[in-house]
Image (cartoon, rainbow, N blue to C red; front, side, top):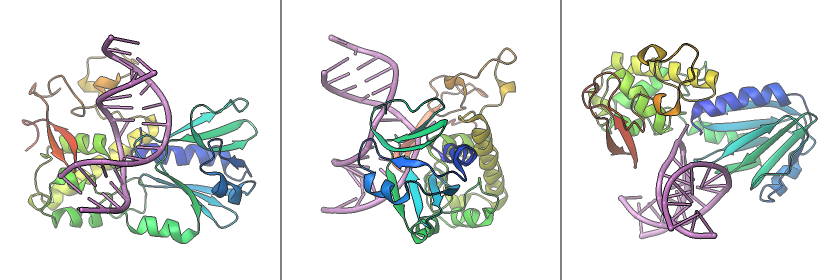
Length: 264
DNA sequence: GCCGAATGCCCAA
DNA sequence: TGGGCCTTCGGCG
């Protein structure tokens, strides 16, 4: 589930539901119990997203940190708190809303300096209005690494994962194995804009849909199915635009799907 | 019931 | 570079 759009959408929803409240915070599974006790009953002042990281700002001055990793997931319940389903690491309850977190790579409570340290290791986040595209562009343009690897490197820019890297490079017409140095600045500026638009659409829809509806033969109002939602990512059928067979190349240890005709 | 895969990342060698 | 970790879910017997 989680690339940057998921985390920013969560921050937005959790702010709406929980900001200014003093929730009951505990750990049904038990692995978060000691940290939960430090903020249980405190007022939640804000929830912040930065790349794939989520920060909970408590009135105690402490900051909760969550990273979903590959499997982490939040579930929000509107009715009475249900029996915890599976391994619920953290449960946050206010009247009318229960937020369950399972499977995170990271879930802890610490001082604000911990948050600052995490952010210091991240490149600009395309979903934040204060992001500096020039920083990411300079890092890519100065690197001999493949651009497909650089897009997964969270210190170059943050929030992009394996789906968006493939999709953004397809729309930009850039072959994922091309060296960062061999991309020109205008091309990279356009790539940044593509990433911004894709991630924003993901926040809005709360799912990844990168294809333009107009390129699909769909009845008006029909939901885009999962297999049709991406141009190249995990695509078994030929390229939507040119009919070439979609290929993969291993970059940063993970397969990157691309179209050998549309991407040079 | 078991196995593998999944939109991630860290660490040891 | 390879293994480990976190969990859920669908496919296969």
